[in-house]
Length: 115
Image (cartoon, rainbow, N blue to C red; front, side, top):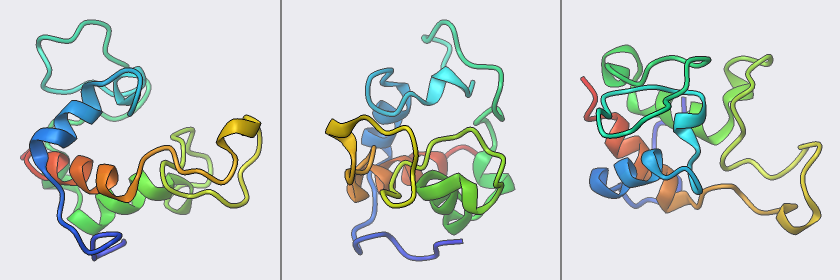
């Protein structure tokens, strides 16, 4: 787990929900489904996000978003915050995280509302 916020600031659940639903930023719904009746074409290859906070602690959620490979080496979920040791990264994105520390915290805050 990563018990503390990445840069000390807590997240905003409303912004986090927006990131989860944004198919150009988080891309979460490409693989996950969840309590989003307004969204069509939700993913089926990763766990449903319903009840995330009942299964995982805040720190465990944060770790999975930062670098799911540290929990499961075979995970296909991208490392949203790790920048080193990655392969097949487009030159324009090398050395840059997919999500900022604040965006990670916003997503964590939202997922913690999913009881």
